[in-house]
Image (tube, rainbow, N blue to C red; front, top):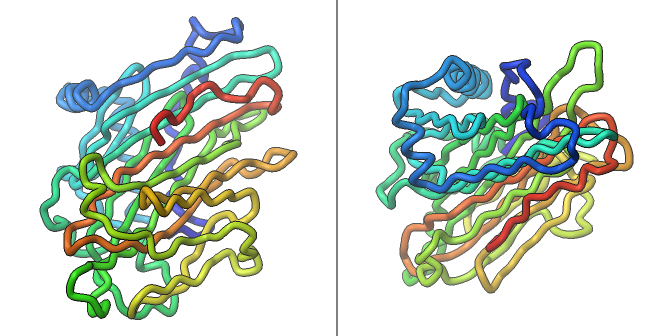
Length: 322
């Protein structure tokens, strides 16, 4: 999970921040693409813009200890948005919204992803800033983890997950897993003007479609509502024979959203009364059991970016079904 240096993807193009046909009218320009459209776009020849986003993703991941091979990446450009993902995960839905208002523009993105298959993880090591960033770790066996990055109008959302299998968990009928999720939103730096800033990050995870019956219980989750961890920007986790201290980006402004019935967990980070940093992040972890089955999870990530003011920066995208 991330600390203060997590996965800050380079913002590559200084092109128009808002589509011309959306400028000035205050009405949102909304795009959406499903899994088939995204996969079709990934088969097309890459533009320079798409290649730049992919190269920046590889570079930033390497800085964080995650060696990414370009051959293991898929890159799709859809309606001006670019999304990059590693083998082992598929991007299944993408929504974007850009709104121009007199008081300030807004850019939003919502990305859904799912396991590419239920085969064992193709990687043999972690994501650099996930398990490796934990301190005092004891127990647990790495069981897969991948990242995606999405760039919309020069605003970037990078998301990752890692899953650990808890061995020797004391039961023969269930398997215990630890699931670690984090995301970073980075606004565009603007010369001689106000930078873009993330104002909301929302990340959610749940059993993948059709797999809820394989899951037994939500054992625990972190962070918890009202839990003050900001003195160390970390939280301590423990399940079975696994324990660790996990660094996190933000403690303030974080709202946990656990749901034991649906074996679901998420957090929402909301900015303060004044604009925060150009890069912000959200993190959570959860422990769950399955009926001796794999633990394929679907992930959702949303980020909203604003410029100049929060006025008319409410956002229009909604997480239907999440």
